[in-house]
Structures are given as structure tokens and as C-alpha cells.
Length: 485
Image (spheres, helix red, strand yellow):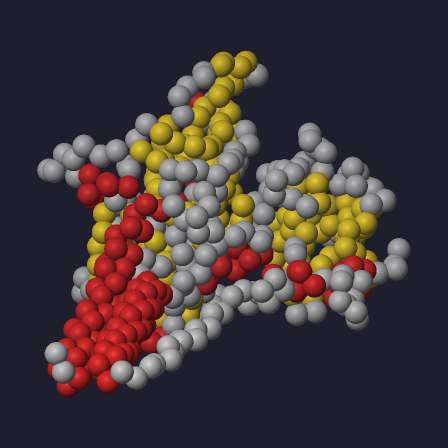
């Protein structure tokens, strides 16, 4: 074969390889996008509220009942966490757990019934992986105004996957979205479906984002959608094509003309709570799946092109050598130099990892005490009376103080059995130069020095010198400035 023939054959080979690379690129992107939202079902579960009557009394006489816990209502929820790790936290609507919160939030309370009978009841939250497999859940935090709640299992689970979160933007209006959950209407009598509340039993409904809205007065951000959602969908994820969670399916409005508008709470409302408690979650983007596929395809295409170039060079050299041999001429061999890049210790592209690796070693790096001062607000919480009398706690800029008896949630911990103090009672945090206090749905209340009781979830500004009590005047703390009191 002559030189022209070799070049023509190599060019044809190169063209076919490039076309194959482009086809692979398109296939990778398309496949990733479709599987994204369908795989999101593996992060969704049923959230149920239960109530058990433990005993009753009339005219001072107790009757032990020991009845089975009965379901009050159920909705949906979805797990969040780090990719590749078993999730422990999940998100739902506040109204999905509202009865649980109003009936003692897991603590025994008394409810007056008919004929002057007083019932002693206890409420529970259960997360179902299927109809016969569930775990109890606990409330980490919530926003009644935004209708968002963050729940926690006692330990991570391998029965669901964590979903990625993506805060929506205005340019997403008109794009496809999917509501995933367990609407009650799907289990209707006409179909009489055998449901197990597992991943294969979730219902998908689809539509588009109509617009992003902000509610006047509260500032709560919502997503208006034309996706059909019903009772039981509440708390489930609204996802995009890539399977990233944009919102929490919540409610609908119907006017006198029977026109309906559906809404999901913007996921950013939940992100605020997650960051407040340093709860891990994974962020994604709408095009991330297709972008990964695109990069894989491009990489494969570049590799194939490189192979083609090497083949062309090899064929050219071979032809040249053959010609020189025939002419009796010597030929020096040529070499192809290739360079490679590698990761060198200390050259991390992760800013957080780089900072962590250098801390305390490089000349001029602030000491641990200096670094701590960066986060010091200059305010302290001082125990005045009770279990924490005489103890002082720094209020940091980056981490709220959560007061209560539960050592897994709280960082200002009261001894077990402290009267009037709930597992997660109240929190103190710093924001834009101001200290705030909020009750976390405590059973016995958070009281200001004036005697006023904070409503559940209510936030107020706390000024230096102002004190507050947990449950009773016995457990009192005061806000002071550094060096004060």
C-alpha cells in the first residue's frame, strides 16, 4: 500500500473513532439523566404518627389499659446525608408530625375525655421501610411557619439511600419535576392494591415548575407546581430530572372556580435547619448527572483520538523505515515523549482539606486559641441556679447552643431526670450581631424573667443581662458578655 493509501485509511479510522466517541458521550449523558429521578424512590419512606393510651383515671382511681399504639395519620419523608454513607436524618413537613408534637412529643401527657375520664397518653413517630419494618424517629428541629421538620433515627440505616439537595433558581420555571411519595388515594378500594410501603410502592406524579414564590409576612419560600399531589404525599421530595430534591411536597389551594394551585416548600427552608445543627447533606446540580456522563464520554473520545494518532504515526514510521531499508539507508529511531500529572501530598484541591492539613504547622498560622477567637461572639451563657449553676458556655458564631437532656442532640446538657427540662428544650444562637432564643417544643416551657412563656418554635432577641428558665425557676441561666458577671 502506498503512502497516500495509508493516510486515507488512517483518516477513515480516525473519523470512525471520533464518531463513536461522540455517540458514547451522548449515551452516557442521556442514561444518567433518566435514572436520576427514578432512583430517588430509594430515599423515600412513610412517616407515621402513633398514639398509645397507657392508663386512665376517674375520681382518683387508675386503670391500666396497655393498649396498642394506633396510627393517627401518615405522610412521606426522604433521607439526606453524605453520598456512599448510610443516612440517619430525614426531612418531612411539620404538619405530618403536628399531632405528635401537640400530644407531648414523646412524653406522657394527660388528655381529658368523656365522662370526666382523664387518659394518660404517649405519642410516637415511626419511619416505615415496608409495612412490617419500621424504626422510631425523633424530632431534631422544625419550622412551623415554613412547614418543615427534620427527624433522626437512633442509628444510620442501610434500608434507604440519601438524596441530594439542590436549591432551585428562577430560571428553572418551566422545567420538569416529579413528586414522589405515598398518597392515600393510590391505595383506593377500587384498585385494592397490596402495598408494602416499600420503594417499589411509591407513586410518581410529574409536571413542571410554574414559578418560585415568597409568602408575604413570613418570607417562607415555596415552589408553585402543576404536579398532582394529595394526602399522604406531604413531606415527600419534589425532584428534578437528575433526582435532586428541589422542594418538599406540601399543599394545594382551590378557589371557588375549582381552579387548583399546588405548592412545595423550597428546600432552602430545610437547608437552614440542617446547617443550624451541622447535619450532613449532599448538594447536586440539575445537570450534574449529564455532565458526569459528558465528561466520561469526552475522556473516552480523547483517549480514542490519541490511539488513532499513535497508529497514524506508527504506520508512517513503518512505511518510512521500509523505504529507507530498500534504499540501503540507515534510520535513527524516534521517541515519543509523554508527560503525566499526579497528585502530590499537600497539593489538595479541596480548600477545607488544605486548611486542615496546614493548621498549626506553617509559620504565621494562628494558634488554636487564635482560631477559636475568630468564632467567639463575646457572649456567654451563665448558669445562675439549678444543675448548671456556676457553669459558663461560649456562644459561637458558627454553632448554636442547644439546651436539654439528650446528649446526642444537645451541647449544653442537663443531667438525666432534671425536672422540667426536655430532651431538646431550647436553643441560643448568634445572627448578625444579635443573640436569639427559641423554644424547641419543650413540654414544660421556656420562660423569660418577666414570667412570659415562649410559644413552641417562637424566637426572641435575648439581650445581655436578661435571664430565662427551663421548666421552672430552678433551672435559670443569664446572657452575659465575656468577662461579665
